[in-house]
Image 1 (cartoon, rainbow, N blue to C red):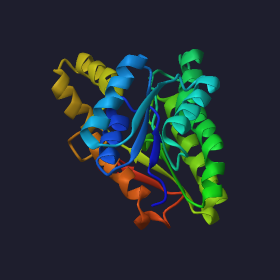
Image 2 (image 1 turned 120 degrees about the vertical axis):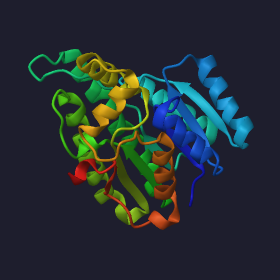
Image 3 (image 1 turned 30 degrees about the vertical axis):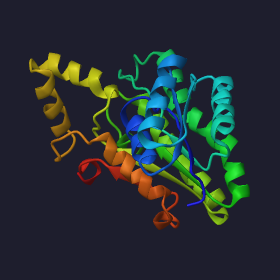
Image 4 (image 1 turned 90 degrees about the vertical axis):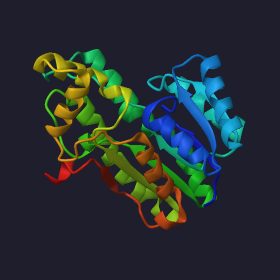
Length: 259
């Protein structure tokens, strides 16, 4: 393991924050990112520093804006030093039929879920190559492997992220840099609350009943996946045990893609 400095996009809640806590517990230094105010983000970073004894910093950045994205990377390198581990986790969701999908929602989802990963990789991977070691983990989705109705932009972005990761893996494999995707299924994160609420309304059930009902439409595993499980998979992909794993798209989906 050749770097202790990690940049995690979208890391103030859900999978990103769970990953930050898992990695902080293993001694990694962290650059956190989100849309919270500077004071809120700094408070979160300071809490991780106190709890785990690592360096942690925060930078507010809208990743659909390339200037702000570059500001985030500059802040990470200034606060921590060279970034050897990149976790592209930031993502947004919107559901609608293809014919009625708002263009502005399409553009935003592609920008944050796909283009932002391209820009962070383009900035950071050449330095990883020069160092002879690096890890890029892109949080795709089961929707990077299969499709669902009403999710045109999300599926397009996540399928694109899988393809982008494979290209980068091929280009950097001989330099000690690996690139992999994790493809979660139903995970306990705020991004799903809208879908659960809509299912509850449509079926006249409670929010908790809607969770289990919607999950069972896609997977035999009846529970939401804990974000910490994604963090532990990332921890493994960072480790020396994963030196030969690159270009992979690893589902953690409760059997969704086995159906």
